[in-house]
Length: 312
Image (cartoon, rainbow, N blue to C red; front, side, top):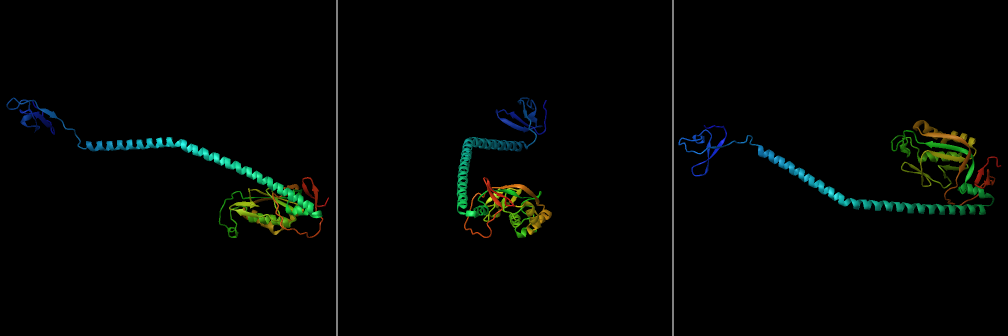
């Protein structure tokens, strides 16, 4: 009995030993044809879905891409492993070089400080030796000796919300409307203290002389080319109470008040009983001439000049 399946090709061996094909349903597919001598038919069922080769190609392509990515990653890892010792060695050499140069710079700075102190000491000795009865005044004006006595303390700081940059009304005059203290602000404060009767002034420990410069580099304030960090503490030796009243009533004192009220700049003024100012780090005396009386409100002490309003 023969069974027919739609879409199935039948392969059989003919009498000559060759394979032949006949559509299903023909008489040749039955076991035992009309003659009863035909061989048994071999039925091959076709696989449904003719798009199978396309899927196979997609899978092969994906596998190839993954294999290529794996090769690239492997080669990159191998290259990194090979170059890692070289990079680590170069980094170590760079660190060693930086440390060496930093140490050399520190040594040079120490030498500069020592030479500056030696020069300053010799200059002070020369002023004391050749200044006669005016040596104390010359030393004071040149900042050649430390000063101690009553005075005034003015602390100025940026506003709490200060930031760099800006474009407010102060910018047109070289300022920034951001609440930051500027070099021009410190110049006016220091000049106001001199005008109020200060005998010696220092900012953050930097002694000011007649040749000192207060300037800016970006947002930083420099005193004699040394950067300062806020808050800025200004110490002035002199009659503290009189200086306080005179400074706050002056144009520069009113200027500081405007900075507080309009820009949030923080400032505090206090009278101090004991103010100590260091000597200037270096002296540059080009020319000097004596004008006026030789009486000074200072007396010599082992650690420098001591201010005494009464002259005692």
